[in-house]
Amino acid sequence: MGVAGALGVAQDKVEVVTQDVGGGFGQKTTVYPEYVALCWAAKRLGRALRWTSDRSEAFLGDHQGRDVATRAALALDAEGRILALDLDHLGNIGAHTASYVALGNLYRAAATAYRVPALHQRIRAVLTNTAPTAPYRGAGRPEAHFIIERLLDLAARKLSIDRIALRRRNLIPRAAMPATSATGITFDSGDFIGNMERAAEHADWRGFAARRAEARARGKLRGIAIANYVGIPVGAPIEKVEIAVGGKGVELRVGTQSTGQGHETSFVQVAAQWLGVELEEVTLVTGDTRRVALGGGTHSDRSMRLAGALMVEAAEKVIAKGKAAAAFILGAAPGAIEFSDGVFLAAGTNRAIGILDLARSLDERSDLPDALKGPLAAGAELFGRIPAFPTGAGIGEIELDPETGAVAVIRYVSVDDSGQLINPMIVEGQIHGSIAQGLSQALGESWAIDEASGQVLSGSFMDYALIRAADLPFFTTDFVEDPTTRKDNKLRVKGGGEAGVNPAPPILINAVLDALAELGVEDIEMPATPYRVWAASRRAMGRRALRAAPAA
Image 1 (cartoon, rainbow, N blue to C red):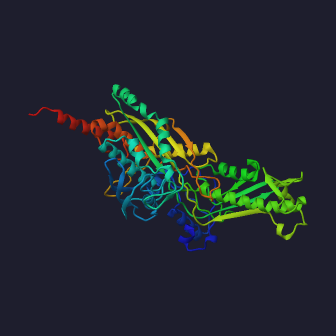
Image 2: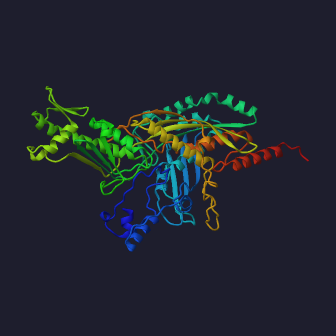
């Protein structure tokens, strides 16, 4: 669509074929200028062209994310209950506008999982001399969670209220569902308080004081922090699924393509289970506009939520068509056919036919009524929304060396309500990946530029501080499900691809500040690099020394 629009041609004149593209790692959904330039040049020259972006080029030209500065104020009563939240956001959209999605999501997610009686927001977008910003894993929602969770930790310290107790007083209770947030989002399910308390138990929150004392005896500082999240995924409101059953198997055509999410496993699982066939009898077709006419892309926890619902709808249409055909072939009365485990059975008899055999028979027979002719196939389209709200809580524990500023993540717990898990291993992997991305951003990732010229100073992985596996502990993950009440979500899917990236940054920063609190440090700019942690501790110890010095 984007390429066709830029070239001024009809969409059916542009074919896009993308095979296995590997992991997307966050960037998504936008058309880069090089795609259009390459098509234009190929047409002009009358020959095929190839362009490969290298990593150095990607550092310079790819869209960036998370560039928002916010002034925030939180009002609470004497018992620590939120009264109002005031937010003033200034978002950098770069030298050329690519998207406002992240800023829109930041607005919608501002209250996250908390009851906020009064909310005021101002959002401004500014053009600068940097690369454009666009949706990146979470797309505005991590920023919203960072703001409110930092404010709650500051409030807990100012009011001398336990951090978990403060959050418990302000989280939307399960009994209040359905509940509408301050920005008009209606949550139909979610046990926010239960998730938090479950995470605290897994993390041994009560035993932290002893671990802090042990670290202090070794000259180290320990900190712990908690954050709650609720995903507010939107995504492109357009999707299509087609299912065609043949004598040798099932072809499943889906408009949404995987960028490392394992659709070739989980999508096939849904189709195979609904149609009662073996996994190896299902072939998934994606990434080819010559065969897949419509799709909304992989982002915003939408893939299984939308495509899964359409797979169920298309499969049910196939089964209904199969029942009518089976009644004719088995000599049964219309409406007397049952379907289970891939087999059509004439009720009260032993006459049955498998779904693949039925499809083969429909291809071979010439005596079928007109209504039954044609392949055993059906499709389903969606032009709208199927809202769902993944929820959860995370707890992180860190240890830092005040002499060097080095921060080590010692423990991380994640409790997630991703809805029904189609493939638990895939979802757990996505949770791990999104936690790692959130911690990486909070610990070191930064797109450094020269302010005057816009020259990128972190244009390689020698300079861009990406987190490594050795920097992370083994995560403790726990899945719960508080089922959605929506009738159009038969799979009860909520989503897990963006879960960990929402709470991880505030957890890491709040944990670092919890460790530094005894030195009097109240704030630190993200990312919490060793230099920034060291400098903050040096300044705090210097102030302490000045206060302790005897008067001249």
